[in-house]
Length: 322
Image 1 (cartoon, rainbow, N blue to C red):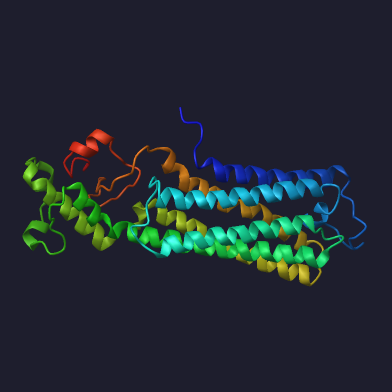
Image 2: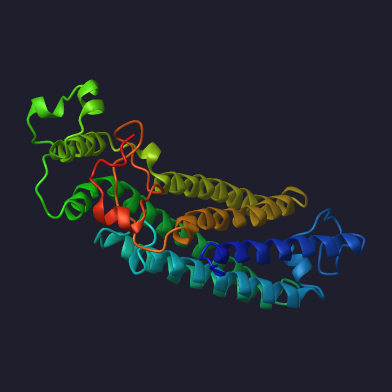
């Protein structure tokens, strides 16, 4: 039984980060929700930075640095599983996703350094240094997610376009008819498709599905595409929350500013949840996944439906058609 799975890395990041936030709020509440000496008497609620400037500072430093390092390892694992291990949808010899995943790791390092500086230089004694670290963290995470979005969208879009080359390899290098096939062969009736058992026609049936898939590119069957959409939605909401937090803090709103910051802090854990979801297929397969047209729609493309190794070596191209 396999003990370690890559999805456990972002889950560990979530656990560390949320434990930090909950511990901070709980301790402040148990203390009677005090207003600290370096805060304004008009303040009604408290920022995370204010709690972190008290005797809870060591917890903030250790947990903040730990989640930063864990996030870096998550992105390194993302590149490894797609680039080297090939247990997730690969880069298809594309240069753009390889560059962007490297850049995302670099920006994650900047963000991790920023949150560590922010934790070490507390707002009570090193106000400008604290804001500098906070700015590094926000900018680093922002550009990290942007690079991650570019990487995953480029892979998701090219996911369908590379099915032909994978089928060539699967079919022993035999040439296949695609969009250049004759109209008569591409317009097989549904009755002929259901009752054709001759293995000599099976490549043509599979080629028809490839053509339909290539022309329509049904992204609704592409889990990576939807994971990228979730990241995009997460990023847009995070930017809106960050802008609101900055405006409230700038104009001295003692209630909306802290509340917006806490919402943003908890929202930050969402990106790690999505990354954990991305890594689940890597824990299910022990060998490089193949590419197959399958499903009741005859043009569906489901990355998660993978045959066993022996079936991969011996099966006909259309054996997984429903």
